[in-house]
Image (tube, rainbow, N blue to C red; front, top):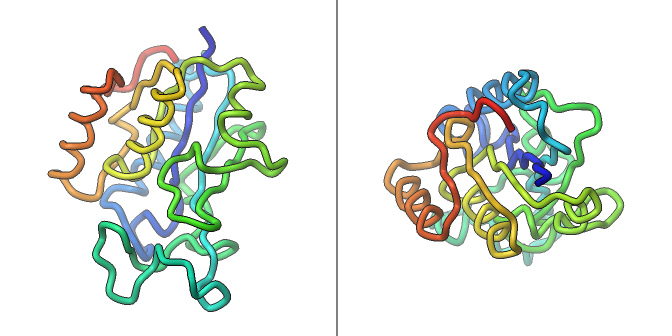
Length: 198
């Protein structure tokens, strides 16, 4: 079995001070950094980080993911606009030099990392296939949205998926609890503690 870790959307706009902050997002960034630099993470074949990379509505007014009065279900405040400071990975997050970046959301909301592509135009599925990955650990932001969407898509594609809850944070307790219950119902492991070994 060959395992990768997916670091989902640990970007400035999803951390305190950003346009759509998740409480504790900066702490999640630090937790992931510490975990990836520990012996526990030695078993990963690769590290992939996903990033929201949305268009500027000044140049793409048809992008319906943003709204001046968002409902926080289908529409949201503007966030992670491509090339902006808010779209950058949080400074507390330090990734290995050989990590793969997958960007998503250029034309649609794209909650799942499996909707994104790397700099070579490969889908996340192709990136993982090319390295022979069949097991995934998922961490990042936010538990009740993009983390869950990515984990569910990974499970549907046949991967053995674990979500490491100690390295995630959700927008709200109620929606996070529902998301974790849904993942577990689908056979996704949701671990409260970081594993001693990848």
